Picture 1 (cartoon, rainbow, N blue to C red):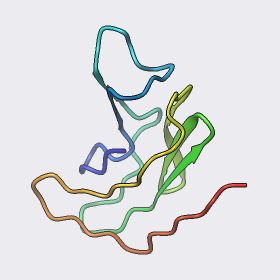
Picture 2 (picture 1 turned 135 degrees about the horizontal axis):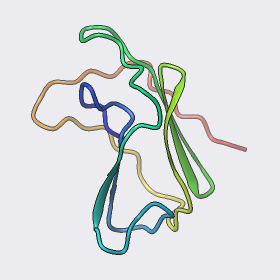
Picture 3 (picture 1 turned 30 degrees about the vertical axis):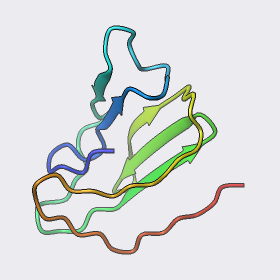
Amino acid sequence: CQLWNGKAGDLIHSSGTESAELRADSALIILPKLEPSTEKPVGEWNTAEIVCSDSTITVHVNGQLQNRLTGLSNRQGFIGLQSEGGPVQFRNIILTPLD
């Protein structure tokens, strides 16, 4: 899930798992947001809720559904937080197991 300013909520789907959205002719696709951006101005905190449930990932940014990836073949793995070439801050990270 992208956090880059202006693109928060985009999903980057790279090879390694199958999904309904992955095209056979591409190992990397970027799923743009479903709705207009709900990001706050630079310097303000954004809230992201990323839910991985069964074979679907949903992404909400500041309470608005921004993206969905469905039909995932891989349903377990690691959680990674990263920054590519610039500073980023995280706070109040909460992991909640789903029933």
